[in-house]
Length: 256
Ligand code: MLT
Image 1 (spheres, rainbow, N blue to C red):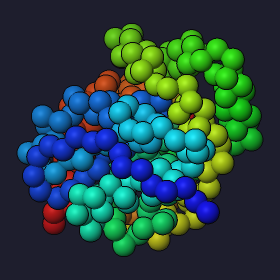
Image 2: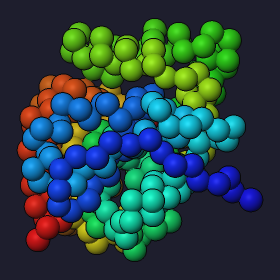
Image 3: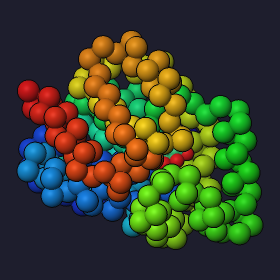
């Protein structure tokens, strides 16, 4: 039996079409803060902390992308929303894609920020298991040593990333790494989604292979791909105005 959904902690801003923002790993809902003034006039923004992160409850479960998507569905029920669009950053994008598979009738649009539909390669999966072993031994420290420089070339943003990592519970980090390692290939159902679809990537993001993004989008002629020059894995911190601009055009398609 799958675990019960939990009620996520969340913030609400603005009015209009509902758009839910899903943060990546190992962040929390405040990753989106710089975008709120630009976006709030255009949509009803719903910003949850995923299970185990920020102020949301921790559980004993592996955080599969399906379980995290089920929590998002439960939050929509709680807020009385039949439908919403999803914006997912990195792991949040994997959750948005799982949601699209499980609850397609409840989705009005999809935006992936520094994310993609591929499953882990065997090497990536193995690296996650090694990180899990290190976190079991040393707490969150291994993420602090490795992640900030890998995620962004911008020293100020690296410092912000460090602060987010320090706020992350080691237990949630382990559960999410295990959940990401076992996620499915979302390309299988992505091409069935006929909704406004935006992909935003940074040209300096070592975690995103543009050739794979091109392959993902080949069968989706309606998709828009915005590549931000010189930006790494954290466009919401590195280039919030440019990301907001791309999201506002996408939100206007949701209204149309
Ligand atoms: C994230 O930013 O959510 C993670 O780096 C995603 C991943 O490790 O695949």
